[in-house]
Image 1 (cartoon, rainbow, N blue to C red):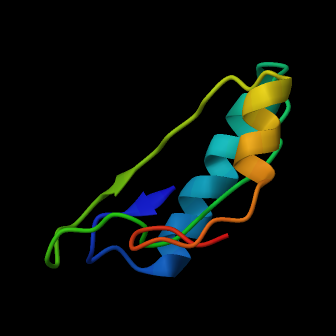
Image 2: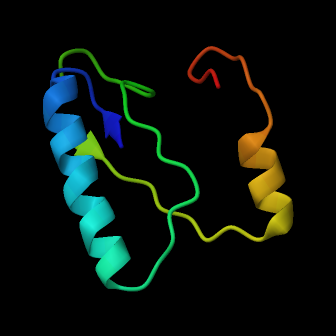
Length: 73
């Protein structure tokens, strides 16, 4: 769950909780959740949500440490 710039972190976590509830109700398992201002625009309101299907290779990649301009894990 990505802030576009002006959305407070509290609202992102509320949005994330609702998304998690709906995914769980649909029988989906969440491997990893990231919430924060990852790719922003100057004080733009709103949020973006990214959900992806992971196979074993993609799971290893998403778990691998990363340090770049827009993302750090």
